[in-house]
Amino acid sequence: MRVLWLAAALQCLELSAGLYFHHKARHASVVIGKTLYIDGGEIAQWDQTGNGFSNGSTVSNAEDPNTYYIDLSTSWTATNATITSFPKNGPVLMSGALWSNTSERAFQYDGGISLAGALDPIPPNQLWALTPTGQSRWSQLSSAGNFSQLSRTQEGGYTSGNGLGFALGGYECVATIKDAADYYTPGLVMYNMSSSLWYNISTGGDYTVGTQGARTQLVTNFGTDGVGILVVLAGFTQQEAGIGLDRVNMFDPVTQQWRIQRTTGSIPQPNRNPCLVGVPGDNGTYELFMYGGQQRATGGWISSDGAVYILSLPAFHWFRVPGSAVGRTRHTCNIPSARSRQMISVGGIVMPGPLNSSDFTIENTGAPDPWANGLGVFDMTKLTWGSYVQPSDDYTTPDVVKDYYKTNGLYPSSWDDAGTQQWFTVKVATNSTSVANTSTSATPSAQSISQPAGISPGAIAGAVIGGIALIAVTAVAIWLFVRRRKSTEQQRNATFVSELGTEHVSEMEAKVSRHVQHYGKPRLGDGQIHELDHHRGMELDGEPKLRDEQIHELDHHRHELG
Image (tube, rainbow, N blue to C red; front, side, top):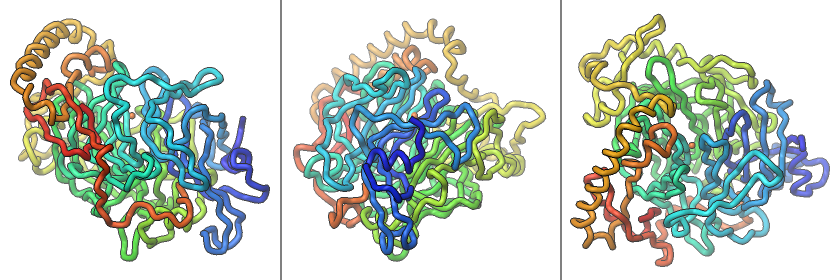
């Protein structure tokens, strides 16, 4: 069925005629093939009286039970985009994840119920798959291991890539667990889409404590064995302290190490719930594009400005791109393909700010979205907002970023540690568009570490066949040795079974992506620290890690598995 958000809301929510699109937020979105899917969240309508805020306007907000899709194979503008809907035969959730894999489907993980209107029963903790074929596109999957013991959260840092799904932090509340107190959950959950196994990982650096509203991106140019480095940005702690963007927290899924590197340039203010995408640039660089979010201000919260911020790696340098867009939060962004130059922003709440810190106030006083259908398209090469264009040239690093590298070299003036330097040292191609590397104080030889080979199975087949037997035997031997030494400690250790040491080479295809509150009910932002009930403790027996020197002791609040 071809719809716009307005028509969809009128049909699904049975609203009377004369209501107009106000905003859509707290949804999840993912690209599968050449289609953008948008699922869950809430949609708000208004009668176009007053100024579009709750004072002087009639604004209705409710959960959105449909899944939508937009064809990315043809050009469109925000006003004429064809948005097609189909009813969802699975749980309708807010602020969760849609992870994509290479087998043309996506996985729904995490998320809470809408608190707009009557409260729905909280569904069981389940994993659902979206497959864009047939009449019933959603199906429930069986989950291996300790998935059923995971504590459901919402507004975590979600991303996927190379056959892995990541969920960092988030918070528990009455929308995710019945009668739960608000609690910001530490820990990183990782899902292997090939083996259907779940892993727990202790968070490090600035994310040792629980955070909400962080954003993550798997940067595939760098790291160990071509798996990539998980970059974590933004987010706030339960004490409403923002995680500074003057440094970057990173995690290597293979070695299971956390590291921090300082950043330079036009550093954004700490924020939560922005959107984040990433794309490989020219000559071994990788650019992360961050847009929107919420910032602390005197008297409450405000939307981040309408600028787009670029963090270019391996320089770890920020660039600010001023523009005509308005700031927004609880929106999503996607790129159509790995080399696309277009970032598509969907939905979000436009805050007039400053507002107090309750979600209820923020979402009931948000301004109507100035974008038609809540859609915006940003050209990451030209650094301009416009329409979606197909066919389109591939992404190339913006001139302002290239100019910086020509003047300052490929790497930071100093590294915070040698391990980070090793992760991000690459070979630079020599051609007419090559970026000159003039930095010498902190840059090893370009030949010392090769750039990862990428994710093509054909490119790694020879190495995989020759090495699987040796890796497997070695890993088992180490595992048995460590197990004997640590057997007396397992009851209190939440650990990570590093099947990446033996399985990622063959399984990951690449060497191994409401809530208007119900009225009057307070939500997050009260500044209080809430002790978790005993039934939500996450201590589980686990197996020792094969590729980590440390076994991490976890408190009973950890969002982690054994």
